[in-house]
Length: 118
Image 1 (cartoon, rainbow, N blue to C red):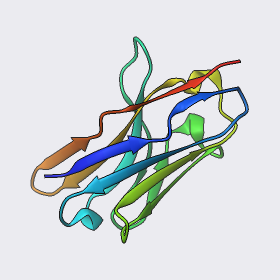
Image 2 (image 1 turned 135 degrees about the vertical axis):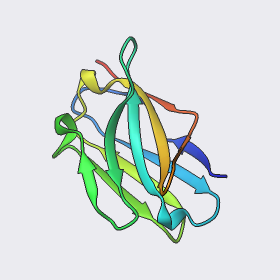
Image 3 (image 1 turned 90 degrees about the vertical axis):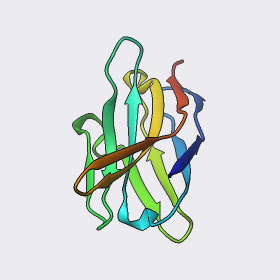
Image 4 (image 1 turned 120 degrees about the vertical axis):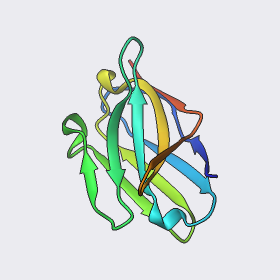
């Protein structure tokens, strides 16, 4: 069982920055892909950024060059640094841990609100 707790959301003006952190607990977390997803009102949840267990990173096109994901396997944390924020980045952001084996297991945090507004 994996538990995820996000922190760092809030209100920021357009062009500003925020850092989201996710603290994970459980066993063998270094073998999980870790990522951030977001869901805006009336929209489906979408993947923002993922870092695999091997360190490969993928970003959603709209955040490339603005967001940076990183993981610290020693501390069991994953961080999303968000720069040059835009109003369209407003959403609830969720931390995800995914195990991809014979079956796929997804674990989610409770979510943290990010609001970009002047």
